[in-house]
Image (cartoon, rainbow, N blue to C red; front, side):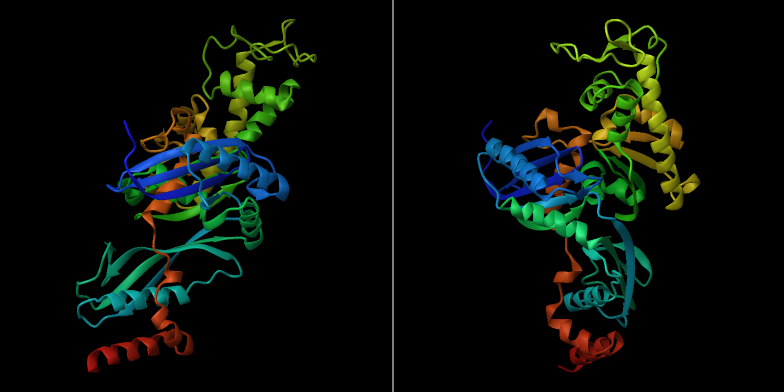
Amino acid sequence: MALPRISKVYGAINVGSFRISAMVMGISETGEMVVLGSGHRASHGIKRGYVTDMAAATYAIRDAVERAEKQAGTSVSSVWVGCSGAGLASQIAQVEVDIGGRRIEEEDVELLLVTARDGIQPDGRMVLHAQPAHYTLDGAHGVANPRGLHAERLGVAVHVMLADGAPVTNLIEAVQKAHLEVESVVAAPIAAGHACLSPEERDLGTAVIEIGGDVTNVSVYAGGILRALRAIPMGATDITDAIASAFGIRRFQAERLKCVAGSAIASPTDHREMIPIDGPGETASGAVARGADDRNRIPRAELVSVVTEELAKLTGEIGKALKDMGYSGARGGQVVLTGGGAELAGIAEFAQGALGRPVRIGKPPALRGLPEAHATPGFATLAGLCLYAAADPVDIRSVGSRFQQSVRHAGRGMAMRVWHAMRQHF
């Protein structure tokens, strides 16, 4: 089937510690989202979500983008960048202003957002997002668009995402050195939520656990917005390293064992099943794995034991993070696992038992043109970046230019009174 006419193209890069992936997505004239091309490569110069080698990171970013561009048959000059490290933190700012019972106009909403913007307190950190989540009318929550309605007081809940400035600056510089402009740096949990959760799930309350290579982001959505966030400096690579250490083998061998034969759930036949250390067609590595037989094979039960031991540590930290964020007991609901680490066999069942709540695996939505190999949890954040870009969310830092002088030179109350007086008399 021929592709529809594309009216706009978006580029996205998810910079992870295990892989760097890129996607080129287009929006057709009918509003359909089409994946034009996607590509990935092993990550270099990135550790725990931080840039540790600028030259290596830049090369890897450029290489991943070129692979996506080649598949798409088109190039991109600017990209939306996913960020999973940099000390991400989330906060909700609540602001209310007097309306006096009259009809709410566009100017009232704009002035409210300006007031909210001036109330942001980043405490020396970088603001990645400052977006109105929903409005309130006289305390009633969940109002999507208050324009045209009457109220005594108009309020807004603003979601603010903060990050440490220096790591984000390094990430931006690495992308720019790859000859790309940065449209925006997007927190990975925001992108993962767009890809894996329905609007209803974001409203009712759902925890999203994004298990990356070196970092696991634990985020809680409720009321349509990301309410809380914790970053755990553990991930799927720690499982790989534990396997390599336990059996005295190379990391690439441990990664293959984890992906091919690893599981979070033990079975009665594991003790009888022997797993070769060397892959098909590979020559013997020379060194024999610790505990291996004369054909350099290990019992699958021992591999599963190492995997589950590391998973127990990770889910323990996840459980603590959820409890700290108030997502426990009757106040907790469904958990969605995503990220490359969520592709481990049996991990949903293991997490469900460890966390004591329903767990499902989160994948990218069905998008036209998305390769089957990229329709997996490991690429959910990448797809979410494109979905986020296409949604074109409002950022309160870019609205209300006509009110800036009033708000800057006078208090908020004075600015509101002057504005209302002008509306009444002129």
